[in-house]
Figure 1 (spheres, helix red, strand yellow):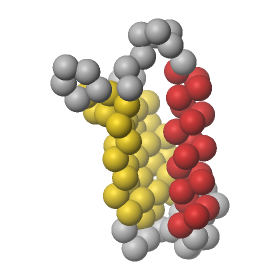
Figure 2 (spheres, one colour):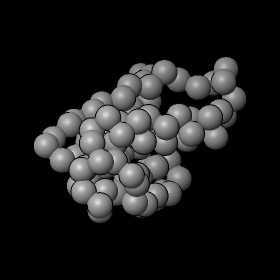
Figure 3 (cartoon, one colour):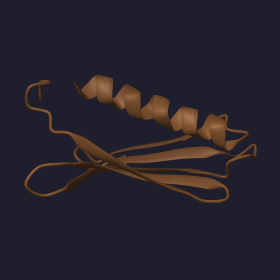
Length: 88
């Protein structure tokens, strides 16, 4: 899909005490969920990023360095931007 065909997206974020969950929706006539993910165990040595790309059923599950929410949010933003650039 080239940039001319891409539809705007909506990013929904839910932050808890030790996790961040998110979903990305493609806009159009109907909203369509295209990706979900979460960062769990923020602040521990066992912080993980889990992402499911609904369009191609690709799952990413990896440990990340996120000793606080700022680092976790930076990891999430970087991951989403990387995927966005790869798909453009």
